[in-house]
Picture 1 (cartoon, rainbow, N blue to C red):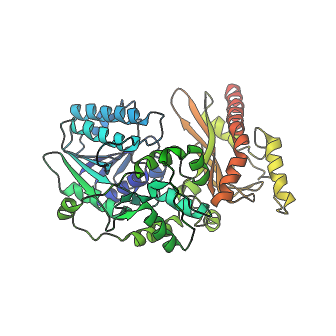
Picture 2: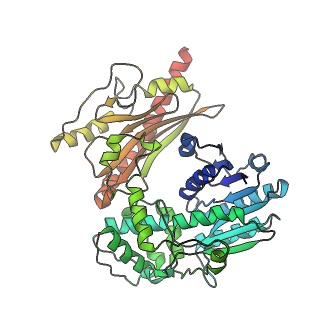
Picture 3: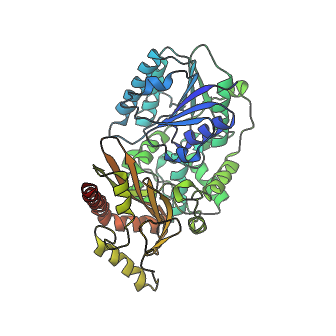
Length: 478
Protein backbone atom coordinates (compact mmCIF):
# COMPACT_ATOMS: atom_id res chain seq x y z
CA UNK A 1 0.00 0.00 0.00
CA UNK A 2 1.13 3.53 -0.77
CA UNK A 3 2.44 5.49 2.20
CA UNK A 4 3.06 9.11 3.08
CA UNK A 5 6.84 9.33 3.42
CA UNK A 6 9.24 12.07 4.49
CA UNK A 7 12.87 11.75 3.41
CA UNK A 8 15.26 13.96 5.39
CA UNK A 9 18.57 14.31 3.58
CA UNK A 10 16.96 13.83 0.17
CA UNK A 11 19.67 15.71 -1.72
CA UNK A 12 22.46 13.19 -1.04
CA UNK A 13 23.49 10.49 -3.47
CA UNK A 14 21.46 7.89 -1.54
CA UNK A 15 18.54 10.23 -0.87
CA UNK A 16 18.07 11.16 -4.53
CA UNK A 17 17.99 7.52 -5.59
CA UNK A 18 15.69 6.53 -2.73
CA UNK A 19 13.19 9.31 -3.54
CA UNK A 20 13.12 8.24 -7.20
CA UNK A 21 12.53 4.60 -6.23
CA UNK A 22 9.76 5.50 -3.76
CA UNK A 23 8.12 7.60 -6.48
CA UNK A 24 8.21 4.65 -8.88
CA UNK A 25 6.45 2.50 -6.26
CA UNK A 26 3.60 5.01 -6.04
CA UNK A 27 4.27 6.50 -2.62
CA UNK A 28 3.59 10.13 -1.74
CA UNK A 29 7.01 11.53 -0.86
CA UNK A 30 8.10 14.74 0.81
CA UNK A 31 11.75 15.26 -0.11
CA UNK A 32 13.47 17.62 2.33
CA UNK A 33 16.98 19.09 2.32
CA UNK A 34 18.78 22.43 2.14
CA UNK A 35 19.44 22.17 -1.61
CA UNK A 36 16.92 20.38 -3.83
CA UNK A 37 17.57 21.80 -7.28
CA UNK A 38 18.26 18.43 -8.91
CA UNK A 39 15.16 16.75 -7.52
CA UNK A 40 12.98 19.75 -8.35
CA UNK A 41 14.05 19.59 -11.98
CA UNK A 42 13.18 15.89 -12.20
CA UNK A 43 9.50 16.56 -11.33
CA UNK A 44 8.99 13.03 -10.06
CA UNK A 45 5.36 11.82 -9.71
CA UNK A 46 4.07 12.04 -6.16
CA UNK A 47 7.14 13.95 -4.91
CA UNK A 48 7.05 17.40 -3.35
CA UNK A 49 10.29 19.20 -2.51
CA UNK A 50 10.74 21.13 0.74
CA UNK A 51 13.78 23.28 1.51
CA UNK A 52 14.69 23.03 5.18
CA UNK A 53 17.68 23.61 7.43
CA UNK A 54 17.33 21.07 10.23
CA UNK A 55 19.57 23.13 12.48
CA UNK A 56 16.77 25.75 12.52
CA UNK A 57 13.76 23.54 11.73
CA UNK A 58 10.76 25.85 12.10
CA UNK A 59 8.81 23.91 9.45
CA UNK A 60 9.69 20.37 10.50
CA UNK A 61 6.60 19.70 12.63
CA UNK A 62 4.35 20.73 9.75
CA UNK A 63 6.31 18.49 7.37
CA UNK A 64 5.73 15.50 9.67
CA UNK A 65 1.96 15.97 9.64
CA UNK A 66 0.30 12.95 8.04
CA UNK A 67 3.59 11.09 7.50
CA UNK A 68 3.67 7.32 7.98
CA UNK A 69 7.41 6.70 7.64
CA UNK A 70 10.39 9.00 8.13
CA UNK A 71 13.67 8.15 6.42
CA UNK A 72 16.56 9.80 8.24
CA UNK A 73 19.51 10.05 5.85
CA UNK A 74 21.01 13.25 7.24
CA UNK A 75 24.77 13.31 7.66
CA UNK A 76 26.67 16.60 7.77
CA UNK A 77 30.06 14.88 7.74
CA UNK A 78 32.79 17.48 7.74
CA UNK A 79 30.48 20.45 7.10
CA UNK A 80 31.09 22.02 10.49
CA UNK A 81 34.17 22.37 12.69
CA UNK A 82 32.39 20.50 15.46
CA UNK A 83 30.15 18.41 13.30
CA UNK A 84 29.48 15.93 16.15
CA UNK A 85 27.76 18.71 18.10
CA UNK A 86 26.10 19.86 14.87
CA UNK A 87 24.69 16.38 14.22
CA UNK A 88 23.52 16.02 17.82
CA UNK A 89 21.62 19.30 17.60
CA UNK A 90 19.92 18.22 14.37
CA UNK A 91 18.96 14.87 15.92
CA UNK A 92 17.61 16.70 18.99
CA UNK A 93 15.48 18.90 16.76
CA UNK A 94 14.08 15.88 14.91
CA UNK A 95 13.45 14.06 18.20
CA UNK A 96 11.48 17.02 19.56
CA UNK A 97 9.44 17.29 16.37
CA UNK A 98 8.65 13.57 16.46
CA UNK A 99 7.41 13.89 20.03
CA UNK A 100 4.95 16.55 18.88
CA UNK A 101 3.92 14.85 15.63
CA UNK A 102 4.69 11.12 15.87
CA UNK A 103 4.98 8.88 12.81
CA UNK A 104 4.55 5.12 12.54
CA UNK A 105 8.21 4.32 12.02
CA UNK A 106 11.64 5.87 11.50
CA UNK A 107 14.24 4.26 9.23
CA UNK A 108 17.70 5.60 10.05
CA UNK A 109 20.67 4.88 7.78
CA UNK A 110 23.71 4.69 10.04
CA UNK A 111 27.26 3.34 10.08
CA UNK A 112 28.77 0.12 11.35
CA UNK A 113 30.34 0.64 14.75
CA UNK A 114 33.81 -0.30 15.90
CA UNK A 115 34.33 -2.72 18.76
CA UNK A 116 35.19 -0.85 21.95
CA UNK A 117 35.91 2.87 22.10
CA UNK A 118 36.66 5.07 19.12
CA UNK A 119 37.93 8.59 18.52
CA UNK A 120 36.27 8.73 15.10
CA UNK A 121 33.92 11.73 14.98
CA UNK A 122 32.11 10.08 12.08
CA UNK A 123 31.24 6.97 14.13
CA UNK A 124 30.49 8.90 17.33
CA UNK A 125 28.05 11.17 15.51
CA UNK A 126 26.17 8.12 14.23
CA UNK A 127 25.94 6.70 17.77
CA UNK A 128 24.56 9.92 19.25
CA UNK A 129 22.07 10.35 16.42
CA UNK A 130 20.66 6.85 16.85
CA UNK A 131 20.29 7.27 20.62
CA UNK A 132 18.48 10.60 20.25
CA UNK A 133 16.10 9.35 17.58
CA UNK A 134 15.16 6.37 19.76
CA UNK A 135 14.33 8.80 22.59
CA UNK A 136 11.42 10.20 20.53
CA UNK A 137 9.20 7.27 21.43
CA UNK A 138 8.72 6.18 17.81
CA UNK A 139 9.92 2.73 16.63
CA UNK A 140 13.32 3.25 15.00
CA UNK A 141 14.89 0.79 12.59
CA UNK A 142 18.59 1.59 12.41
CA UNK A 143 20.29 0.16 9.32
CA UNK A 144 24.06 0.14 9.72
CA UNK A 145 26.37 -0.13 6.72
CA UNK A 146 30.09 0.18 6.14
CA UNK A 147 31.66 1.15 2.84
CA UNK A 148 29.07 1.64 0.13
CA UNK A 149 30.14 0.91 -3.44
CA UNK A 150 28.28 3.38 -5.61
CA UNK A 151 28.64 6.63 -7.52
CA UNK A 152 28.96 9.44 -4.99
CA UNK A 153 29.99 7.30 -2.02
CA UNK A 154 32.82 9.21 -0.34
CA UNK A 155 34.73 6.02 0.56
CA UNK A 156 34.51 4.75 -3.02
CA UNK A 157 35.43 8.12 -4.56
CA UNK A 158 38.51 8.52 -2.33
CA UNK A 159 39.72 5.10 -3.45
CA UNK A 160 38.89 5.88 -7.09
CA UNK A 161 40.72 9.22 -7.02
CA UNK A 162 43.79 7.77 -5.35
CA UNK A 163 44.08 5.06 -8.00
CA UNK A 164 43.48 7.42 -10.92
CA UNK A 165 45.54 10.34 -9.61
CA UNK A 166 48.64 8.87 -7.95
CA UNK A 167 51.49 7.09 -9.78
CA UNK A 168 52.26 5.07 -6.65
CA UNK A 169 49.82 4.27 -3.85
CA UNK A 170 51.41 4.71 -0.43
CA UNK A 171 48.43 4.66 1.92
CA UNK A 172 48.96 4.49 5.70
CA UNK A 173 48.18 1.50 7.83
CA UNK A 174 44.41 1.94 7.79
CA UNK A 175 44.41 -0.03 4.52
CA UNK A 176 44.83 -3.18 6.61
CA UNK A 177 41.45 -2.64 8.28
CA UNK A 178 38.71 -4.99 7.16
CA UNK A 179 35.11 -4.27 6.31
CA UNK A 180 32.16 -5.70 4.41
CA UNK A 181 31.51 -3.32 1.49
CA UNK A 182 27.99 -3.35 0.11
CA UNK A 183 26.76 -2.36 -3.35
CA UNK A 184 24.54 0.72 -3.40
CA UNK A 185 21.87 -1.27 -5.25
CA UNK A 186 21.70 -3.82 -2.42
CA UNK A 187 21.55 -1.12 0.24
CA UNK A 188 18.70 0.69 -1.54
CA UNK A 189 16.75 -2.57 -1.74
CA UNK A 190 17.04 -3.01 2.03
CA UNK A 191 15.90 0.58 2.63
CA UNK A 192 12.87 0.14 0.38
CA UNK A 193 11.84 -3.27 1.72
CA UNK A 194 12.03 -2.14 5.36
CA UNK A 195 8.84 -0.16 4.60
CA UNK A 196 7.00 -3.45 4.36
CA UNK A 197 8.44 -4.85 7.60
CA UNK A 198 7.52 -2.34 10.31
CA UNK A 199 8.24 -3.10 13.95
CA UNK A 200 6.60 -2.07 17.21
CA UNK A 201 9.95 -1.57 18.92
CA UNK A 202 13.47 -0.37 18.19
CA UNK A 203 15.80 -2.63 16.26
CA UNK A 204 19.25 -2.50 14.68
CA UNK A 205 20.25 -4.30 11.50
CA UNK A 206 23.68 -4.54 9.91
CA UNK A 207 24.01 -4.60 6.13
CA UNK A 208 26.90 -6.23 4.32
CA UNK A 209 28.07 -7.32 0.92
CA UNK A 210 29.18 -10.90 0.19
CA UNK A 211 32.90 -10.34 0.93
CA UNK A 212 35.11 -9.37 3.85
CA UNK A 213 37.86 -7.22 2.35
CA UNK A 214 40.59 -5.02 3.72
CA UNK A 215 40.83 -1.58 2.16
CA UNK A 216 44.09 -2.71 0.52
CA UNK A 217 42.26 -5.65 -1.07
CA UNK A 218 39.58 -3.23 -2.29
CA UNK A 219 42.30 -1.15 -3.96
CA UNK A 220 43.61 -4.29 -5.66
CA UNK A 221 40.15 -5.34 -6.85
CA UNK A 222 39.43 -1.81 -8.08
CA UNK A 223 42.64 -1.71 -10.13
CA UNK A 224 41.87 -5.10 -11.65
CA UNK A 225 38.37 -4.02 -12.69
CA UNK A 226 39.34 -0.53 -13.92
CA UNK A 227 42.49 -1.64 -15.71
CA UNK A 228 44.48 1.13 -13.97
CA UNK A 229 47.45 -0.46 -12.20
CA UNK A 230 49.55 1.25 -9.56
CA UNK A 231 52.24 -0.07 -7.19
CA UNK A 232 50.65 -0.27 -3.75
CA UNK A 233 53.10 0.15 -0.87
CA UNK A 234 51.47 0.73 2.54
CA UNK A 235 53.58 2.84 4.88
CA UNK A 236 53.36 2.66 8.70
CA UNK A 237 52.04 6.18 9.26
CA UNK A 238 49.19 6.73 11.73
CA UNK A 239 45.95 8.15 10.40
CA UNK A 240 46.33 11.45 12.27
CA UNK A 241 49.29 12.35 10.07
CA UNK A 242 47.15 12.36 6.95
CA UNK A 243 46.91 16.07 6.34
CA UNK A 244 43.67 17.60 5.17
CA UNK A 245 45.79 19.47 2.61
CA UNK A 246 47.18 16.20 1.27
CA UNK A 247 43.63 14.91 0.81
CA UNK A 248 42.72 18.20 -0.84
CA UNK A 249 45.56 17.62 -3.29
CA UNK A 250 44.94 14.01 -4.28
CA UNK A 251 41.14 13.72 -4.35
CA UNK A 252 38.20 15.73 -5.60
CA UNK A 253 36.14 14.51 -2.63
CA UNK A 254 35.64 17.48 -0.27
CA UNK A 255 38.66 17.18 2.05
CA UNK A 256 36.72 17.61 5.30
CA UNK A 257 34.48 14.69 4.31
CA UNK A 258 37.45 12.57 3.29
CA UNK A 259 39.25 13.29 6.57
CA UNK A 260 36.20 12.43 8.70
CA UNK A 261 35.70 9.25 6.72
CA UNK A 262 39.31 8.07 7.01
CA UNK A 263 39.20 8.47 10.80
CA UNK A 264 36.77 5.56 10.83
CA UNK A 265 38.71 3.40 8.40
CA UNK A 266 41.39 2.52 10.93
CA UNK A 267 38.87 0.20 12.62
CA UNK A 268 37.67 -3.19 11.49
CA UNK A 269 34.01 -2.61 10.62
CA UNK A 270 32.52 -6.05 10.09
CA UNK A 271 28.78 -6.54 9.74
CA UNK A 272 26.69 -9.45 10.96
CA UNK A 273 23.85 -9.34 8.43
CA UNK A 274 22.19 -12.68 9.23
CA UNK A 275 19.10 -11.15 10.83
CA UNK A 276 18.62 -8.68 7.98
CA UNK A 277 19.01 -11.36 5.29
CA UNK A 278 16.46 -13.57 7.02
CA UNK A 279 13.98 -10.69 7.02
CA UNK A 280 14.81 -9.38 3.53
CA UNK A 281 16.55 -11.97 1.33
CA UNK A 282 18.25 -10.78 -1.84
CA UNK A 283 21.18 -11.69 -4.08
CA UNK A 284 24.22 -9.73 -2.95
CA UNK A 285 26.34 -8.14 -5.67
CA UNK A 286 30.00 -9.12 -5.72
CA UNK A 287 32.49 -6.32 -5.05
CA UNK A 288 34.03 -6.47 -8.53
CA UNK A 289 30.62 -6.30 -10.19
CA UNK A 290 29.60 -3.37 -7.98
CA UNK A 291 32.77 -1.48 -8.95
CA UNK A 292 32.16 -2.21 -12.63
CA UNK A 293 28.55 -0.99 -12.43
CA UNK A 294 29.61 2.16 -10.58
CA UNK A 295 32.28 3.07 -13.12
CA UNK A 296 29.76 2.58 -15.94
CA UNK A 297 27.27 4.83 -14.15
CA UNK A 298 29.88 7.54 -13.62
CA UNK A 299 30.52 7.68 -17.37
CA UNK A 300 27.05 9.28 -17.66
CA UNK A 301 27.57 11.79 -14.85
CA UNK A 302 27.31 14.94 -16.97
CA UNK A 303 24.23 13.70 -18.84
CA UNK A 304 22.21 15.54 -16.21
CA UNK A 305 20.21 18.69 -15.50
CA UNK A 306 23.31 20.28 -13.91
CA UNK A 307 24.88 20.33 -17.37
CA UNK A 308 21.68 21.03 -19.28
CA UNK A 309 21.94 17.55 -20.84
CA UNK A 310 24.38 19.20 -23.23
CA UNK A 311 25.79 16.76 -25.83
CA UNK A 312 29.10 18.63 -26.06
CA UNK A 313 29.67 18.35 -22.31
CA UNK A 314 28.76 14.64 -22.47
CA UNK A 315 31.19 14.01 -25.35
CA UNK A 316 34.01 15.76 -23.48
CA UNK A 317 33.55 13.78 -20.26
CA UNK A 318 36.24 11.20 -19.46
CA UNK A 319 36.04 8.33 -16.92
CA UNK A 320 39.16 9.64 -15.15
CA UNK A 321 37.51 12.96 -14.24
CA UNK A 322 36.71 13.42 -10.56
CA UNK A 323 33.13 12.59 -9.59
CA UNK A 324 32.93 15.44 -7.10
CA UNK A 325 33.57 18.90 -8.55
CA UNK A 326 35.92 21.38 -7.03
CA UNK A 327 34.04 24.62 -6.59
CA UNK A 328 34.69 28.26 -5.84
CA UNK A 329 32.17 31.07 -5.73
CA UNK A 330 30.47 33.81 -3.82
CA UNK A 331 26.92 34.67 -2.75
CA UNK A 332 25.63 38.20 -2.34
CA UNK A 333 22.33 39.50 -0.97
CA UNK A 334 20.73 42.33 -2.92
CA UNK A 335 17.58 44.42 -3.01
CA UNK A 336 17.54 44.29 -6.82
CA UNK A 337 14.66 42.45 -8.45
CA UNK A 338 15.11 39.08 -10.13
CA UNK A 339 14.34 40.67 -13.49
CA UNK A 340 17.03 43.32 -12.98
CA UNK A 341 19.59 40.71 -11.94
CA UNK A 342 18.72 38.50 -14.90
CA UNK A 343 19.08 41.44 -17.30
CA UNK A 344 22.59 42.21 -16.01
CA UNK A 345 23.75 38.57 -15.94
CA UNK A 346 22.74 38.27 -19.60
CA UNK A 347 25.21 41.04 -20.48
CA UNK A 348 28.18 38.72 -19.89
CA UNK A 349 30.70 38.94 -22.71
CA UNK A 350 29.37 42.35 -23.79
CA UNK A 351 30.45 45.85 -22.87
CA UNK A 352 31.16 44.90 -19.24
CA UNK A 353 32.90 41.70 -20.39
CA UNK A 354 33.01 39.58 -17.18
CA UNK A 355 32.05 42.38 -14.78
CA UNK A 356 35.23 42.11 -12.71
CA UNK A 357 38.89 41.19 -13.20
CA UNK A 358 38.68 41.47 -16.97
CA UNK A 359 42.47 41.60 -17.24
CA UNK A 360 42.66 38.19 -15.56
CA UNK A 361 40.08 36.74 -17.93
CA UNK A 362 42.02 38.14 -20.91
CA UNK A 363 45.30 36.77 -19.54
CA UNK A 364 43.77 33.30 -19.20
CA UNK A 365 42.54 33.43 -22.80
CA UNK A 366 45.97 34.61 -23.96
CA UNK A 367 47.56 31.49 -22.44
CA UNK A 368 45.35 29.35 -24.70
CA UNK A 369 46.37 31.35 -27.74
CA UNK A 370 50.06 30.88 -26.85
CA UNK A 371 49.65 27.11 -27.20
CA UNK A 372 47.85 27.50 -30.51
CA UNK A 373 44.27 27.16 -29.29
CA UNK A 374 42.34 29.79 -31.20
CA UNK A 375 39.47 31.07 -29.07
CA UNK A 376 36.39 32.71 -30.53
CA UNK A 377 35.38 36.12 -29.24
CA UNK A 378 32.02 37.82 -29.02
CA UNK A 379 28.44 37.04 -28.14
CA UNK A 380 25.01 37.23 -29.79
CA UNK A 381 23.82 40.75 -30.57
CA UNK A 382 20.66 40.51 -28.45
CA UNK A 383 19.69 41.06 -24.84
CA UNK A 384 18.78 37.52 -23.82
CA UNK A 385 21.11 34.57 -24.11
CA UNK A 386 19.71 31.22 -25.17
CA UNK A 387 20.86 27.63 -24.80
CA UNK A 388 23.54 26.88 -27.38
CA UNK A 389 24.78 30.47 -27.67
CA UNK A 390 28.53 31.16 -27.66
CA UNK A 391 29.98 33.76 -25.31
CA UNK A 392 33.63 33.95 -26.34
CA UNK A 393 34.87 30.38 -25.77
CA UNK A 394 32.01 29.57 -23.41
CA UNK A 395 28.80 27.82 -24.44
CA UNK A 396 25.43 28.51 -22.81
CA UNK A 397 24.10 25.15 -21.55
CA UNK A 398 21.34 26.41 -19.22
CA UNK A 399 19.30 29.59 -19.62
CA UNK A 400 16.37 29.52 -17.22
CA UNK A 401 14.97 33.09 -17.00
CA UNK A 402 15.41 34.66 -13.56
CA UNK A 403 16.73 31.36 -12.20
CA UNK A 404 20.04 30.20 -13.66
CA UNK A 405 22.53 30.85 -16.43
CA UNK A 406 25.23 28.19 -16.90
CA UNK A 407 28.20 28.33 -19.26
CA UNK A 408 30.36 25.40 -20.37
CA UNK A 409 34.11 26.06 -20.04
CA UNK A 410 35.76 26.10 -23.46
CA UNK A 411 39.45 26.73 -22.86
CA UNK A 412 42.19 24.09 -22.80
CA UNK A 413 42.61 22.56 -19.35
CA UNK A 414 42.78 19.07 -17.79
CA UNK A 415 39.17 18.61 -16.79
CA UNK A 416 35.64 19.80 -17.41
CA UNK A 417 34.07 22.91 -15.90
CA UNK A 418 31.14 25.25 -15.94
CA UNK A 419 30.32 28.71 -14.59
CA UNK A 420 26.87 29.30 -13.06
CA UNK A 421 24.87 32.36 -12.10
CA UNK A 422 22.01 31.31 -9.85
CA UNK A 423 19.24 33.66 -8.71
CA UNK A 424 16.73 33.07 -5.92
CA UNK A 425 14.09 35.16 -4.21
CA UNK A 426 14.32 35.10 -0.41
CA UNK A 427 11.40 37.46 0.23
CA UNK A 428 13.05 40.50 1.78
CA UNK A 429 16.07 40.14 -0.52
CA UNK A 430 17.36 38.30 -3.55
CA UNK A 431 20.38 36.00 -3.52
CA UNK A 432 22.89 35.87 -6.36
CA UNK A 433 25.37 32.99 -6.44
CA UNK A 434 28.30 33.11 -8.89
CA UNK A 435 30.19 29.82 -8.90
CA UNK A 436 32.73 27.81 -10.89
CA UNK A 437 32.55 24.00 -10.90
CA UNK A 438 35.54 21.92 -11.96
CA UNK A 439 35.85 18.15 -12.42
CA UNK A 440 39.62 17.59 -12.50
CA UNK A 441 41.36 15.11 -14.78
CA UNK A 442 43.82 13.41 -12.44
CA UNK A 443 46.70 15.21 -10.80
CA UNK A 444 47.11 17.72 -13.66
CA UNK A 445 43.49 18.76 -13.18
CA UNK A 446 43.95 19.13 -9.44
CA UNK A 447 47.15 21.17 -9.90
CA UNK A 448 45.37 23.36 -12.43
CA UNK A 449 42.64 24.10 -9.89
CA UNK A 450 45.21 24.94 -7.22
CA UNK A 451 47.00 27.23 -9.70
CA UNK A 452 43.75 29.10 -10.29
CA UNK A 453 42.92 29.25 -6.59
CA UNK A 454 44.52 32.67 -5.84
CA UNK A 455 42.36 34.28 -8.53
CA UNK A 456 39.28 32.43 -7.30
CA UNK A 457 39.71 34.00 -3.86
CA UNK A 458 38.43 37.33 -5.11
CA UNK A 459 37.27 37.15 -8.73
CA UNK A 460 33.85 35.61 -8.07
CA UNK A 461 33.25 37.93 -5.13
CA UNK A 462 33.96 40.88 -7.41
CA UNK A 463 31.71 39.51 -10.17
CA UNK A 464 28.78 38.94 -7.81
CA UNK A 465 29.10 42.33 -6.15
CA UNK A 466 29.37 44.20 -9.46
CA UNK A 467 26.36 42.39 -10.95
CA UNK A 468 24.35 43.25 -7.84
CA UNK A 469 25.41 46.91 -8.00
CA UNK A 470 24.44 47.22 -11.66
CA UNK A 471 21.12 45.50 -11.03
CA UNK A 472 20.34 47.76 -8.08
CA UNK A 473 20.96 50.82 -10.27
CA UNK A 474 18.56 49.41 -12.85
CA UNK A 475 15.95 48.79 -10.16
CA UNK A 476 16.27 52.37 -8.92
CA UNK A 477 15.65 53.73 -12.42
CA UNK A 478 12.46 51.71 -12.66
